[in-house]
Length: 317
Ligand SMILES: [Zn+2]
Image 1 (cartoon, rainbow, N blue to C red):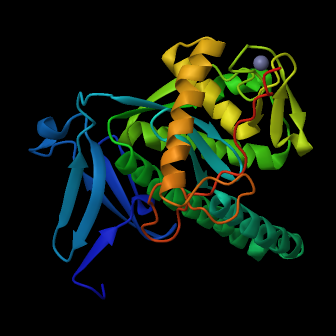
Image 2: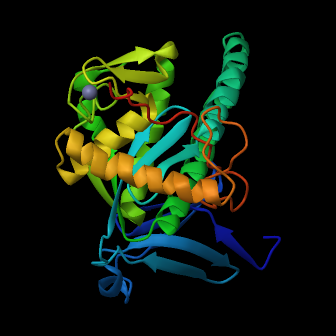
């Protein structure tokens, strides 16, 4: 060891059947600690393992208590997409969080993998390189998702987070592309980690981005699918925002309805926009400048994006 102590990242250990396994050299050297007969076992039953600190002669183990019965004062509906995480709640309005970094991780590794694979097919000793890339990619993605979910749960205390129930998504399968599967894997992990750190509610994913939250009719895609418009009432929404609003509605048990839509979305968002306009930042329709988002940028990895379009209603005749 070069240092007197090491913080063991969550990606470098495993905790199963009361045994902690720490990776020292991947696939070669592991340290194992058996806690099955530890004196403190009773005290930490039901807790999650937190950060480990490895010293020369001891291992410091931290445990996290699952969240107690904190009061939920707010719901946020989250729509997971390949490049962004879009949330909606009457209090915060439209929250968009950049996930392009996560997509980038996979893209970079995909290219590396392809290169390594074409070499590996010629030389069998290179096969381990291929699997090494896969592990690194997963660890990087995991690390990002840990930071993302920690930030989200800190930023939105006392919030119940709503997501689509992805296990039911298969029934309404969107696409079969490989990319989708990778993204779906991330989505599952995001929900899983959120569940450790906050309260989560899963809702039926059926047609969340193609149902009009105002009248319940079908929305049709405009502008390459980025914007959706209701066939019946003419409501126009960004597709991701539409998804987030519908998820929020389902969490709360609201049916699509003009009066609820007005009270929960339009009225609240107009006041939010007014506040921002007064502060001189403003939400713009073009997506330039105007950083109206909540402050969150601890290490530069997680960044809120400026929502590009919002809600359009046909002018009354
Ligand atoms: Zn409608």
